[in-house]
Image (cartoon, rainbow, N blue to C red; front, side, top):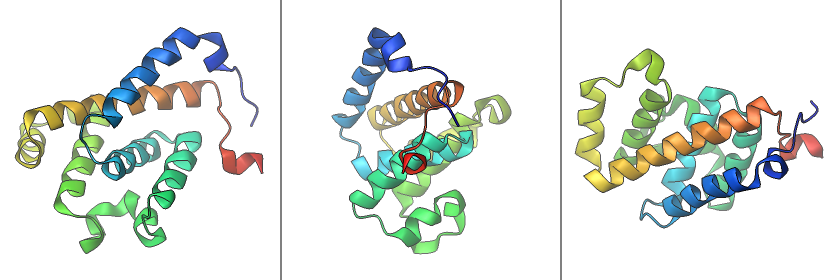
Amino acid sequence: MTQRMDYNAAAPAGMKALGGVYGYIMQSGLPKTLVDLVYLRISQINGCAYCIDMHSRDLLKEGVTVEKLVLVPGWREGGPLFDETERAALAWAETVTRVAESGVPDAEYEAAAAAFDQKQLADLTIAIGLMNAYNRMAISFRATPAAAKQ
């Protein structure tokens, strides 16, 4: 796969703005591993190889086991590998990412609101929107995953 465009070079101010949102999420108080699990799941849903590769590597560096990492797509059947907060975040990430199909039902909102306070849920939703934006940039312009460059 050949990259179509270096979007960082083409729109540095726009990418810096997205980076500012990423910085906000990193200081929001949400656990980094939780955010990275959500980023990975969103990237899997969207089929973004670049982001799947990057977030998988990040999670391994953070100490997430390979067993847990490979079960992220099937987290609902992952048993005790995923705690209640991770399950709530992954469910919210899935319904918000699939908003065109899901419409984000009240039951999904209520489950997320039971697991997170209002600020946490707002921050988590910002993170979900951000990763969906990054996925669309990487997929549209064919960003090459690090694993494919080796």
